[in-house]
Image (cartoon, rainbow, N blue to C red):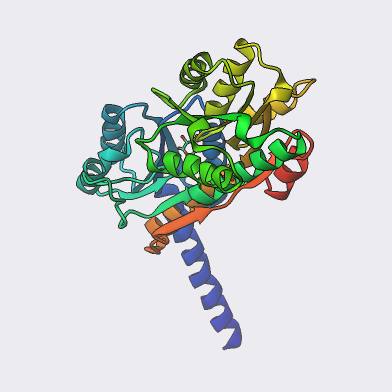
Length: 328
Ligand code: FCA
């Protein structure tokens, strides 16, 4: 009797296991990013791939550099029979359009990094989102800069700041404003903060924008720089080099910690790129994808808003910080 019961149980369990595996193999999830050439997004994809492999589902990676491509990526995923999509959109104002398109294709929608907004600029709170705690991370950038200004014995009132900006993106604005608030609290002069608006969020656009600021202010000999990511800040650093400033006269702190920053730290001598607040592509790639998988397979809806933290790293500490964050 006991034996029969055990055999029956075992049989039932194997049916369960087999059907769970079959379900995973049927799952298809899209991961759409706005800038596939940026190391941060490559890392996100890498960690999303790890999640897909672990659970045995298909991950479809799509690059969407503009709104048109983002919308057709959603249609494409729908046509392929995908059940969910995670997107870092090239334009957050596409929000309602993307939601409508995802609904029409019966796709569950989550956003990563950049949160969708409506026509009034308010976040679409119903779409589950994982972003960074932008203001706080910006404050960490500001504090690192203030500490270096003090360590180098500079007169705070004579220092200029390049604010590499992309204000149409709320997370970008929050990051730079966080940095500025800490600078001001420490006696940095508001009139010495110069806006360098990027036309797009890459190094070249930042270099061009920062060059204008430096050319307009030849009287300022010591500079700090910050922006939404490492690429933006590296553009400002390159501009200071072209302008003939020495690395010791520049304190620039980025956000990201992917290869863009690591390669700079690996250079034989220090540049003006003093540090980067390392954020977690593992959480943004792996965890978002697992959350979507659980939503698709177990109807477990993800938290509406998850904000991740960051940790300052310099050329002296980045190896340890990366290890600590599980990024090695
Ligand atoms: C935005 C930026 C990226 C990265 C991400 C977390 O999407 O453009 O570089 O910082 O937020």
